[in-house]
Length: 311
Ligand SMILES: CC(C)(COP(=O)(O)OP(=O)(O)OC[C@H]1O[C@@H](n2cnc3c(N)ncnc32)[C@H](O)[C@@H]1OP(=O)(O)O)[C@@H](O)C(=O)NCCC(=O)NCCS
Image (cartoon, rainbow, N blue to C red; front, side, top):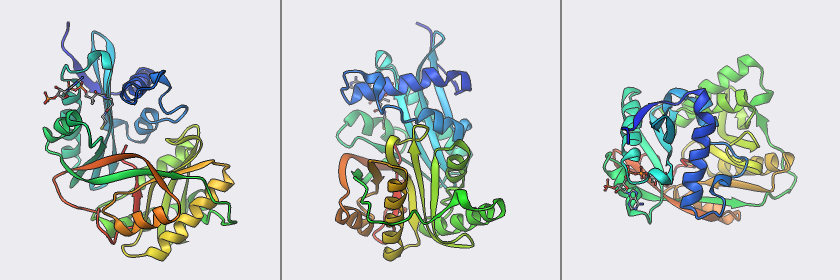
């Protein structure tokens, strides 16, 4: 058999990479039809369209057998998903992918590389430990039905004029920087707007936002049809009241978009945010563990009100 070749993911690879991604995870979760993993939700295509230089594939004899993507959030580089065709498991493909992606993180000067993985899997922990990641605290992925209590979605990024959008992006980067130096979600906010994946909620004015929630909805996003998926949300540190208001607006947007469920995950070390989510009826389905490189709590602190999904 020929040697695996690792290279950037191109547009022509998307169908094959998407299929291998679904089969890899669908097999891991024991689905009867692994290719149906996550229904019409998109992951590989959205990640590629957001930052194609942070993606790669491995080919063996001309076929794509694995791939990886990442999310560049300024100083934070989130690795995922990493996926390998089960027919090629145990051949070192994931090691190649992780090594390649970490070289990209280093080139970009990331202060923190992070990922979400399965805490019960020695295979997964070992794979990422071999690349310098250290397991931290648990991250439950939680969901609930929207509560149609009459809240509106608040100020939406899509409703701002171009000048206001630019100002909002700068001010939102200042806001996220308060939670972790250099944390910057500009790429994600722009991608959601440009790819029609959803919208971003702002609390306060575009010139002085106090909170944001980047929400995916509809079949082009990462939550799929019928779901309001909170990809990332943040307030200033300690701002519990703003967090509550932000969640009200997310409920409002879920109702307005006729979503049947809201998905939101937060690390358990963000103790107040996690408590408020539980109090509001969010319940964990999948529980992962955050792994960081280098080790450290970073923005997994009790005063941090951040929701983010690192899958
Ligand atoms: C997890 C996954 C990426 C590993 O891919 P892979 O190419 O098989 O992994 P590698 O061959 O590079 O090996 C990684 C480690 O897993 C071990 N491993 C691989 N397949 C295994 C299996 N079926 N049973 C037990 N261990 C296995 C290898 O021995 C290796 O451990 P080592 O470095 O201590 O020797 C792949 O199984 C996959 O895509 N799973 C589904 C999706 C997923 O879980 N992605 C990661 C989410 S964080």
